[in-house]
Length: 296
Picture 1 (tube, rainbow, N blue to C red):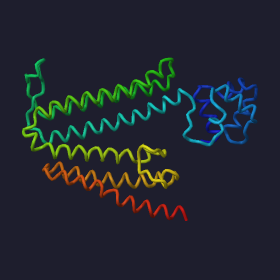
Picture 2 (cartoon, rainbow, N blue to C red; picture 1 turned 45 degrees about the vertical axis):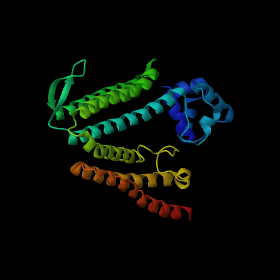
Picture 3 (cartoon, rainbow, N blue to C red; picture 1 turned 180 degrees about the vertical axis):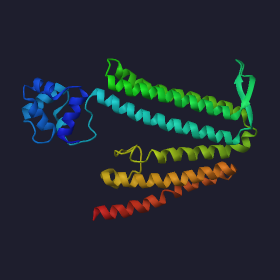
Picture 4 (cartoon, rainbow, N blue to C red; picture 1 turned 135 degrees about the vertical axis):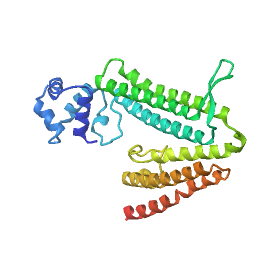
């Protein structure tokens, strides 16, 4: 983010017009307009005054670093966006695990229990999908509140931004626990099915990781997630291209592997997980080809 883009972002983030900022700096509105359009830049004393107005350091304003943290407010917004990506990942995991349970469950399963955990109602196993539907409705409502809160900039919105995605993650965890409890209580032969079930869940985890390796979710270089080598961590183009390639490769392999595992659901499903390691080989080849091309 360049200086002019950062200045405009800061101004809009504070809900200020160019005229209001100009008044605080004792300059003309046209000067602010020229700065934001990249026509010219202010002197060092004016930059210090701008930093005072926005409550940031000089380095945060002038350094060409797209990862800078502007303010506590912006940091919380950034964190909440990341947490909502986790919410999306948990929703997808919840959905796929529930569908996997359905593959192993009998047609009718216990659906309601009394205080002593005795069954008092049986129902179709597909009623479990209603729990997934409730989860998505809750997430949608909370996300709508989240978007409205960002726009309104109310006094309590920072606290709301922190709590909403965390509430979603806790709610999804509770719903998945209920589905898992009902499912494990209903398996006809859990000893026979457990290897296939756990293998499929492992494949689901890799599938979700491959989806969130796409640059749209994992655009910025980091040392925690993605295809991390010295080459990708030092080069933005390499980071995006290699992770995109790995995401496509892993997603195709995990999807095919998951479908095969769901169709047969045998103990040998465990061996399908080896294909997850194999899916990385094309990425290594692409990584080396790209590295040689860029470093020439």
